[in-house]
Amino acid sequence: MLSRKSVIACAAAAAVGLGQLVQGAALNGADDYGTDSHGYYFAISGGQFPTGSTPNGDNASGGTYRFLVDDAVGWGRDASESGVWQKDDWYSDNAGIGLTLRNGTSIVYDNNGLEADAVTPASAVYYDSVAGNYPTGGHGAVTAYSMSNNYDWIYAGYFKIVAETTVTSLTGYFAYNTSPSDGLTAGFDPSDPDVRFRMNIWSNVSGDLLPTDTDSFDGDVFTSDLSTGTFSWSDTGYNRVGSSSQQDIYRMTYTLNSPIVLQPGEYWFSHDAVLVPEPGALTFLGIGASALLMRRRRRA
Image (cartoon, rainbow, N blue to C red):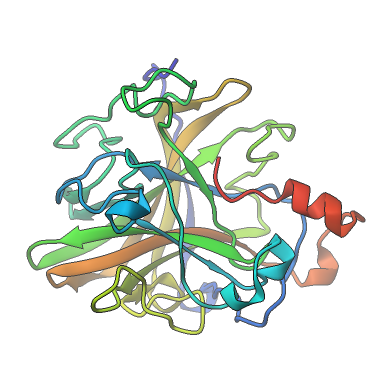
């Protein structure tokens, strides 16, 4: 069962300066690294609907989850899906990728309630992933694979701003388990020196719920690739508990050196991890294509 922990882990921060900006992979139709040696970065979904329950995670409502994949064939999908945003059908109790926006110390947008100062606290029912424990029938917190230069795939989640909003920091949430044998993260470590992080915001395509295609993994409204600031991470104190595995829910925060202003409208948010060594410096596993497809997971 989910519970607040009595001790919250201290934040580990990684500074980002002008000479250290990390860029997402170019869309080249191939997995850039394709290695399992650094584990998997999985973003946590949000379960609150601050701007109303329509749309929600179910495509019947319009949908709040989209994915961008570089090598769709490698994921066992149609080649036409490579390089352009695709709609993905999730559960109606999922609001989008978990997101908290702040202006200074004040929360100005929150679809998850994981923060102690959130207007509406998180539901212990929603963030418990043991099947059968939800009023909605067993869905709860879903995780989304997001690594734009490994098996090049990211998710973005819908959010809506109803008034002009100044933002000084963006927070997403990810699954973390220190065990290398964890069935979801496989030992992903946010302090791994070979791992960096990115955040992006896309505008919405007019007349359709889709992020704007930019021919890259960078957002057209905001990208940390071109904005200086500081990434930091820490334990929220909540757990994602499944029938066979458990992960801490960690926050990933990007604090901007200069604020951004979002105008009222519909947007898409993502955060992802990237690997930074040259490919030859990584440890590649000699696994066949069929085994690789078995290991690839989009949501869990």
